[in-house]
Length: 299
Image (cartoon, rainbow, N blue to C red; front, side, top):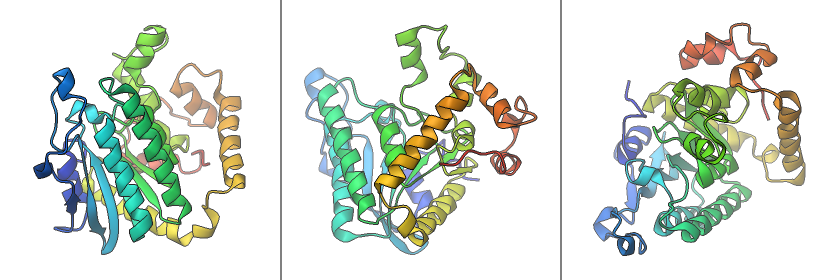
């Protein structure tokens, strides 16, 4: 097993894509760095924390990006966001089989504030344009920094999300919630609480991600390709329509109606009907998927 969690961005690309197929755009050798960080005496990275390029997945040509969680937690700044936007705009011209985003991000860099926020909004718009053009966008989430803030929204704009148990997905991170509302609202030091609230198993169970896999790059690779194939096969039924948006809104409203009073994810699991909600989190990904097949919420 090749751990996805423990790998850095380019190691993940090498493990997920067909061997030797990745061709990087704007590599570190070009030294395209953020114009803001140096002015603040902050460290810079020659790729600004994201690798983008073209590759193949089971022989199919795709465009791909991988955020580097080791640089500022994968946070988005002006150049970082521009690289993602440019990749998506390139997809509109080249029409690859799909776009694959390996996301690991705490959100927007405080150092770049408005520039980062604008960058994320541009990424969202470009992603939706790619989807509207009939090109699937698949997101992988399994890094130690999770996928939070603006990039959490970007992930949910994609056709489908693959997560591992170790992955996390949410709008606000645990530390942000605790800082804003106090430890009584959310104790960021309670790791079990953090993972059962934002972790892959909970997100899968509620229908926020489409596939749950083990912390194995090969499992992520297989799941990404299967979802791409499903998107192409169901192209007529997954288009961005008003009806689809209204269905998604109803799905979310039903969740609020059903679980709005819950104080802990375990309360939600029990209400859904899991007979052993306290011990199910201990199952491996495949066993968890099998055990919850009939109870999982789906959009």
